[in-house]
Image 1: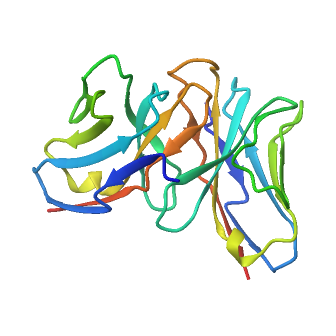
Image 2: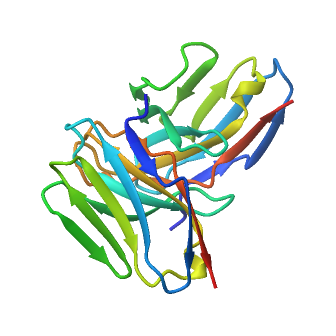
Length: 116
Length: 111
């Protein structure tokens, strides 16, 4: 049973370009979460999605960032017009439960974005 | 605002010793407290978790102690091994499904 898959693992972009990060949840999981980790810091929640729905985007920057989880295919985190401050590790997690305190989230290996 | 405060930032322990990492929170709506272990270049992996209706949970060498009235919880790693060297994150969740993470503790276990 494959775990959470993220690609690419490393992504280099120049300022002003677009970054697209992909996440395939674990088999059977329909809930996806995106987190951002800056160097030497903990993970910060960005967005929580179910298939075709954004449930909670309270952690997403208001501009340039968007996320989707279509009916078919992986979840996509999109960052438009990247700036140096977007350089970070972006982690995706998935879960199969909702409304439960035992909502174990399984994390992918992350995508490390570097903006030159 | 950091919802979960974690200390120490780094910790060095001799092999066989006890590693202790502490976390504190303010939001009484938190009802699930997991600990994650992260190795360099990897994603966090769930280590052990607790709900606030118990004061302690033990799994192998790992124990969570929970003090609801003080709004504090801690991770104890008994008989620490070099393979335990990693960054440990405490976290908390309200049931709204997003985790609030502490800032992490980098543990180094020296042989």
